[in-house]
Length: 272
Image (cartoon, rainbow, N blue to C red):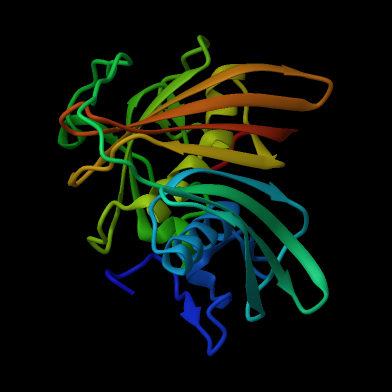
C-alpha cells in the first residue's frame, strides 16, 4: 500500500484477490445492527483495482446487492478482461462466503496530454472553520460517522440539528477524516455515498435513503485538507430518489463527480 487507507484492505498470495475485515469503524446503522457503509465497499474496490492494475481509476460504478455485517470478512475478487497500453477495463465482485454484497465495474489508466481544463465552478461557501459542525444524529460510538468530520455550509444535515433546510435540493458539506488521512480516490468514493444525507434537506422532512448504486468519475485529485461536497437531489418519485455530487478541493479544483439512486426512507419525528 502506498499510503494509509480509511479501511483495512489486505492483499493475499493471489494478486487478483483482496479481503476486507469488517469492524464497527467502517460500518453504520443502529447499535446491534451495524452494516458496512456502501462507500467503504466501493472505496475498497477502487483501491484494490488501482493496486492490481497499477493504474489510477478514471471512473467506477457500484451496484449494492446486500449487507455485510461485522465481524465478517469481505473478499474482493478482481477481473481484468481488457487491458491496453493506456487503460484497463476491470471489475470486482465483493462477497462474504457465497453471498454477493456488491459489484464494481471500472476503467483505469492515464494518458499524457497538454489539456487540463475545468468548466464547472465550485459554489461560493464559507470556509470550514466558519460552518456548523454536524455530528451524526446517533451521537457517539465507534462507527464510521465518528471518524468523519462534517461541517454544513448550506442546507440541513443530520436530522434537525445542523443547518437550515434548503428546499432547492442542494446541500453543501465540508468533509474530512478526523484521523488526518489523505484525500485519495478511495476516500472520495466514501464521501460520494453521502448523497442520501441530502434527502431530508430537499424534502424538508426527516428523511434519508438506502443506496442502490453509486458512480464516481475522477477528474484531478489534488492535495487538500477538506473536500467541499456539492450535493444536489434531482427528484423523488415512486419511493425512489436520484441525486448527484460534485467534489471540490479547498482551492476550487474539481476532483470528481458522482451520481446515485436510492430507496427513499421517511422517518417519523425528528432524529434527536
